[in-house]
Amino acid sequence: MTNLAEEALSIVRSGLLRTGSVPESIADTLAHSTSAPEAPTGEQRSSYSPYIIHLSMPSADTEYEFILQRGTKKFTLHMATAVACRFSFIMDRVAGSHPPYFTLKSNTSYFEDNLNLQEDIFVYVASSSASVVLQGIAWR
Image (tube, rainbow, N blue to C red; front, side):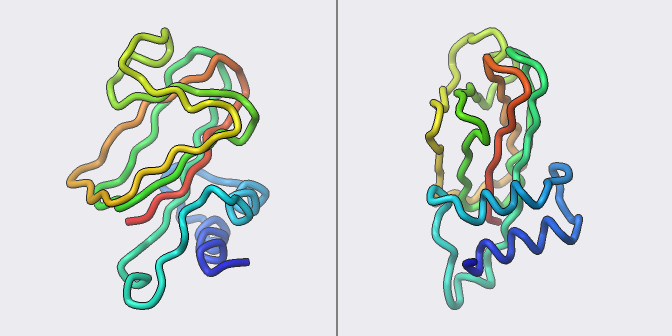
């Protein structure tokens, strides 16, 4: 397991998650995901603190939200199940498919880096399928 995966699993086991509780099987999935960005090394490592994003969406076409925390430098998102989802930074866009929104297609990931968020950012998410989970990892 990589150092990044060890840190993510340590956070899950400690119960210090901001977005809710994440089963170890999800942490293991993230730990073995090829879509996650590389862990920082050396001096960079001390300035990064990962946090897990886990958003359960029990109902189809219903808007759910999570927060990208202030200070986030990079993040990656993907669906735990092989379905697509829609996300936007504007409320009331994704449940009824009202642009602007971004479609995260099935079996793909979305990644942003070179960020330095100056405030918490709400991300609104919906899927046409019920009982699905959006997973991610972000670094501050």
